[in-house]
Length: 258
Length: 332
Image 1 (cartoon, rainbow over the protein chains, first blue to last red):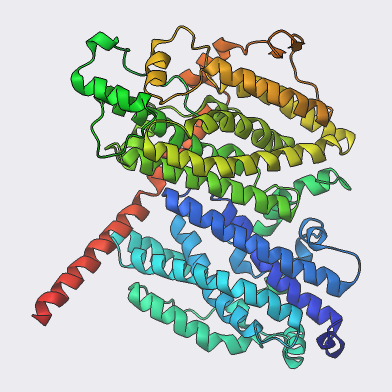
Image 2 (cartoon, chains in turn cyan, blue):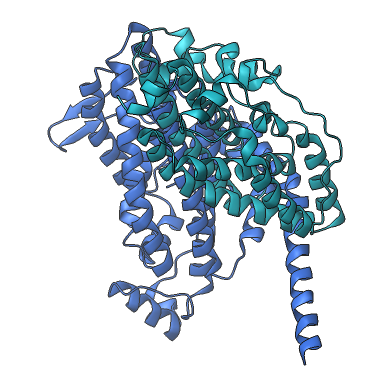
């Protein structure tokens, strides 16, 4: 057991780890829905690759969450045998894919946060967290590079691609703020030096996003309204359907080995 | 795999060959590779475009039946393996479209022919994946049949196609092992899992045999393709090899091949087996398979829905180029 765990409430650490792992699991699921349906073959490959990275990170985060919890649940048990209210992903990642612009904008807004978060986590006081972050941050850097590039090109492309990207930004914007709101669990892991306080990530995230949007000739919405709830288990209607799909085999054939 | 019923030009006798054609045939007979910029008979080029194009289309349509289970894969590891596999298939499509481009046809031209139905993809992908064991059966049988065909195509006479095959074969054999691993877990699992495994084998056995195409002993197309080494073995030879390899694997799994006539023939040192129902095969090729409409429909929809995306990227590239040109002028 790492020393960090002694200093932090086990429940808060579990909460933090499931938030990380559920974000990657649900976004990986959404991205994987594109498989074979992308607008161009290179995007089919890139999307499968992104989903694969995210599912790989899920295995690490939820694997560690299961260890920390100490109740014998592994990553699969957490992914496939919890119901929606126990999921801790942000609402942004469960937004439906929509058109490719919506998928891309969701990815970009998430990647910018993810990269800033993982960079901070590489300095975590918990070496297990730092180790996962060190692996994941390289993947997230690539995801961010790719999604930024496409947002810029499509924002500054045709009138139609610009309009679609602006609409996607308008639609997704109010789901981002949740990532920067701190609660007791966040404050506990931050106090133990395991993870940054979510609110502290906002300036850097804003710097990345505003620069990309400027180049993309897109305008950030001025509305400050923030949808929230995902990080404490109150989700949109979409998550139930994601889980019905994802958990079908484990639920229909309990105890089977696959 | 995945080239069936590829039309070739009628075969000429040695006396009918022009001096150029004769020299070309001699190069092939010596085992030389033909490279993109070199002279080749128009029939050779056309046959290869059909074959490589059909193969490429099969790889990208082949994403769909497997993609059907990605969101429902039963564990995170199975999900990751399946994602990696489908990503590989798309990558194979990419190499093959590139190989076809060296013959003077663009990817967009080939896709237009896929979308309007004038080019085909392998019949196998018009069958549905109905339970999780189907993902195992696709890897074991479909990739297994594909490898049988592609291993020989590594020796094909056209350089870019041959090199693409070498790379693709490595990944395909990995996929086949992963598919068999799923089948093992299912066959050794609960009664319900075993039933899924048997059901998958029952449904995929004959469609897998059809992948090699109908018997080609009377086909002039095959004779020309074989003379050009675009095709190395006959369909029947490959099908026999596939059956001989697969039967013991099914026995090891404790599954039954759905063929009452399957029997070891000591004399030929191979299995006797029933032919698939070729009328079903021709129906599937004609568009009447269980999933033809969904598969082609999904590809056409992806292409049409993605038009704004491709146009946007193109427009940006043009704008960026214009800005660079303007900057150069300003600097002068």
